[in-house]
Image (tube, rainbow, N blue to C red; front, side, top):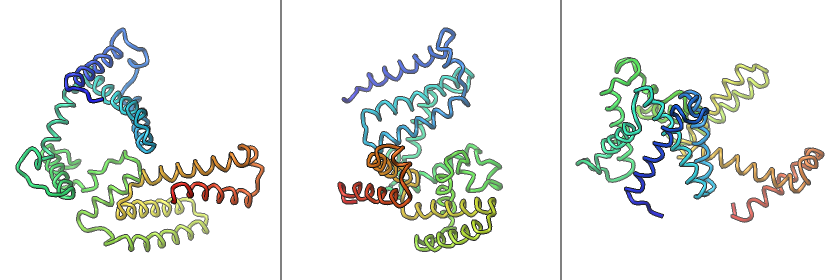
Length: 277
């Protein structure tokens, strides 16, 4: 199973060469037409497929999905090399230097006795890197701490990151209990706007509710993406059991609300029994 360093280097080099050929003059028409913008959506898809394989503990599939994710890196790097921006070698060299620089407790003389200290050091080193490079948006005086959180990440993840950044200066709920109270407050405000049938206000209040949920997850140390994906998988499983019990989608569609609820409770009970959930 374990590859030698030279074998790994050969395989990676071959992958780089294959990508270059696919983008070359006599390469694949589809690959040659792609741009940074057209490839972006595939990067997101491949990332979620990696998540799915991990959650299902499908290790052979994970190997394939990681290869597909690596393909995205090779694709971007090849296009960047063609435009004279950087090469895959630059990407690897930059990563190596960053890993060494951000682990001074391993490659330097800094002490870090636990993971919390490592994370604190990591964040401080990142801030120093941004200051040194001038990558602060509008200069050190104008930039907000929240500029460090990309607007392009999934909104629920962005909400958690924003809350985490604000917490670094003490702007946070002291504990999860306060957030439970905040949830009740946001739900009450949402109900008022729903009753008033104010669509814009409903969206605003629903957003506030989701933002509070994201910050509650942060306090409870729950990953929102993983938690929601787990809930989605649970719903899929229970709904499929309902379909089987009803004899398919047509049988399910013919049932009334009470019968559907009974099937749901039956599927839920059957799902809980094997693992004692």
